[in-house]
Amino acid sequence: MCGIFCYIGMQDAVALVMDGLKKLEYRGYDSAGIAINNNGILIHKRQGKLEALSSSVPPAFRGSKVAIGHTRWATHGSPNIVNAHPHVSADGKIAMVHNGIIENYETFRSSFGETDIQCEGETDSEVLVKYIALQYQEPFQNLEEVVAKVLSEVQGSYSLVIMEESKPHKIIAARRGSPLVVGRSDDGYYLASDILPILPHTRKVVYLEDGEIVVIENNQLQIFDFSYQQKQAEFQYLNIDLHSADKTGYKHYMLKEIHEQPKALRRGHGQQMSNDNLLPELQPFMETISKAGRIIILGCGTSWHAGLVAEYVIEKLCRVPVEVEYASEFRYRDPVIYADDVIVALSQSGETADTLVALEEAKKHGALLYGVVNVPTSSIARLVDVYSNIFAGPEISVASTKAFICQLNALYLFAIKLGKYNGNLSPDYSLSVLKELRQVPDILKNYLSYIVYRIKNIAMIYSHVNHTLFLGRGLQFPIALEGALKLKEVSYIHAEGYPAAEMKHGPIALIEKGWPVIIIALKSDPHYKKVLSNIEEIKARGGSVIGIISEGDESIKDNVENWIEIPRISFLLSPMFTVIPMQLLAYYIGLHKGCDIDKPRNLAKSVTVE
Ligand code: F6R
Image (tube, rainbow, N blue to C red; front, side, top):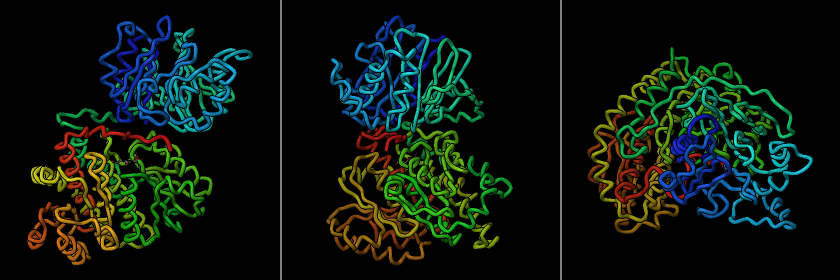
């Protein structure tokens, strides 16, 4: 949700910033811009993807040792060149890039009334930088003091970086609610919305906390709070693996990440299942977790779907009531939260604003907060009492795939650990589930090697459709939702996910001749026969059924128009396999339609605004 990358130091800042922004493009890609300060502030912006910006940088930008860059996902104002960042003060002497939302920007704008300050665009960011410049007068000695004062008045969430024309060796940055990392290397300082683009340059970083301002001037770094009190800067050395963030020969990140799933799971198993001490980080909290009256799972989008699978699994293996909530809904309905609740936040990025604010609300009630994240340095990981890393490695494709399966893996382990701890799960049964879970990466690798060809063909048949219905029962219902979400995101085909049995309560009215329905019908499902009846109901109305079926289930093949088998696996673990055809169907249908798969329209990877 907007990416910021800035550099100040001894190297060619523009090249570094372009490279950094490229790695942040997943956060937004409707427009981009850069500002330098080389004997004066110069701004260059373009509508559209970063390529449009990087291929048109004017020669005057070369040689600057300081630059601030931005790739945008529009919140206020349409995605055009005027609204693109950086924004500047009325006299053009202060430039700013911003990620987030300034909720009370109208209040600031109203103070322009007596002045001749005009905003060219519609963004809250432009208002903010113009307001900061307006306040920059006696008795303030320097810009950071003004920034501190103004930010203490701002409502909303943001990270921002500011440059001042008269101070070419200085950069000021601040955050509240949106991430900002500062890296220090021998040649200078890097500031970014995410650690990924900083890692190739340095592992020495400081994560700005909410309410902090950092000032980098003449190669010195100082941190202040919004009362302009100086704080100790605490750099940490990140000992994290830089997993490959390249496409490594795949046409798209989405396809690469789908094929990476066995490897990602194996990596997780290595860390989370050593000596059968599952998720060892949870050990000190098990007494509290086992006494929980309720587990509340929070997440958005695909992470919410992983939570729905976990609801079935945890209730089955642990007999503890589980509620799964959209984080965005939970936060604002004055939820009832007890101190003995355990709140589980699922988030690939660990930065999703809806999930973060929901957690902040839960924290006030004293519940234990457990995060399941893919980014251990993220805001959610830092907010919760304990977190588990899902070890998916960087997920670049906007449509989430490998994070989902790795979330499931961590949640299965959580359920097994808790079920054993609270005595609901016999040692034999837990061992058998673990044994099967350990086999998943190999079975999945083999499955991916032969199923792609079949799915490509089916995708060709259905790529012209305008509407689809995805159905699944019980554990497969969240997979139906995930299938519909993936298809919508990647191919822009209208898709709805429903519990199979719920179809007769309304959606069946949609079905007419040729209407495609993707239905998960596994022989291992205790309600298999009921799903078969649902298939008959669809066929009776002319629907075209694509069955996601169990390997070796020959009889069902005559009852469906097309089928995709999944390998033999227990029903409990089957979501890790039924989701694969969903991901691949969406990918190949999107590909066939010529969609921009890794950067679907209107979307951004990390949604850091509410
Ligand atoms: C779907 C997708 C989104 C995310 C959602 C939550 O493919 O990627 O629906 O799942 O925005 O993001 P995280 O998990 O980072 O909190």
